[in-house]
Length: 264
Image (tube, rainbow, N blue to C red; front, top):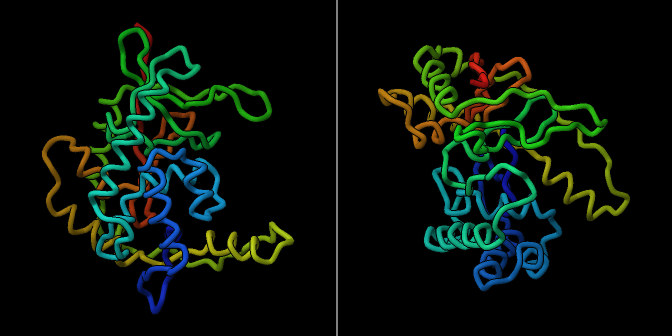
């Protein structure tokens, strides 16, 4: 199950454009490429979204269209938006962390790995000339330390290749248990509540995503390929014990142990 991206709705099992929201997406991209800031671009488009959500809209390839979702912006516009975002990241320079962060796009794991304990995204850092992945937050909300382990990128690559080489395709294709979602009441304003409920609506695209998965797995590369990984994975969750849960695009999950980085 996957959330319906902003700008679409489902009719008779197929994704179609939401007339108002898809128009907002187009305006949002146009404003952003004209030099307007991320949040202000969203405001001009009439989108009341958080900055992080707007960033994901910029990054989401679905807006170029695929086999399930029709295109809202052209591939040229989407690519220009990626270049503009990288330019802005570079222009702002380093953040407050003492370690150097890598620009988005420098690794296929960027934006893919999350700490299953505190929920924060993993980032890649330079530590004593070693490139390591670690949870981006070192403390939890209650003040306790997030004791996540650090991993070299090669460890993640090896774990992924072990997992796909041993995967049981029958288990991968077996349907997920269906559950009826309950949408909490978050806003008194009926319009804001309706928008919130819409954002939480899920589309059952399990069969479609599974077909894509099985097709891709017919041609597993002999060595790690970032492009191949991004075709079949939705995210990677790492717990404090050093176990990685690889979440496929059809939401099926498979676990693999990681070897944490040891200080020399």
